[in-house]
Length: 155
Image (cartoon, rainbow, N blue to C red; front, top):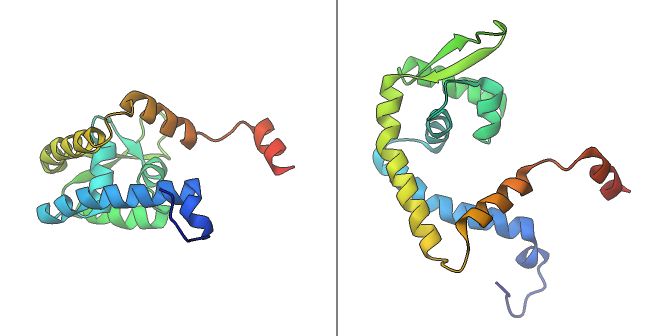
């Protein structure tokens, strides 16, 4: 998106463009969540736990883009509401895992269908883009660069 008559750095900065695109496209789905009475953080937890035997609080916080104290407070509410439960890890009892309860599974069931339909709609808007390649590229961007490359970039 070239913008005529502007010299703003952000208008051509990749990370800004990615963040704005994510925000714009996510907000479309977030309106569906609001209609269903589900907050975005709760949706992120449910979506992350969907198909998972359990996640650590730290892992959930990272996946859901939340700080750990915020995640802990959110999980406290979700436990109280009977959506998830905390359980000790089978290998390390110091680690707590979060597991979805049947109420959470029921809540997320229709939302997953809606999320997949939203994704299909988004991808249909850009038929020239290969969805598998796009997802591979985004996953590669999320990986931390090897230490040698980080050091070279800092020099």
